[in-house]
Image (tube, rainbow, N blue to C red):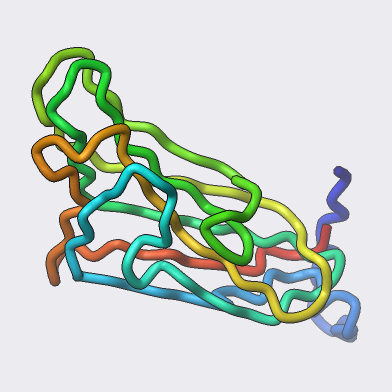
Length: 159
């Protein structure tokens, strides 16, 4: 996809609407959660990780989903998965991240996902989902006030 950069501005020039629209519009949606979430073996929306915004056709959106502490099950080849999806937990996965343990030990790690894409114009819902391969040792998304999970949507400019 080709992106047309904005023009170079000079003193005394007239700033146009087209030039203004070539800038990114910034943050359009943000969700944060400090509530710990216990993973299940089927994809579900992680607590608090739902945002809705009005998408504009032919604009690029950057979606960032961060889980500060992901805990795996304590089984060999156990894993925890987070994903960004449109609409709901059954939606098509836009991007996902996996934390896996090769031995029967629970691991802690951070998963940050970044997706850049366009959406049809209109109301758009994005969710952060998660699941684990097993519920052995209670795999969780551990969050606290000083380290919340977040789902952020930014308009970064025209497509």
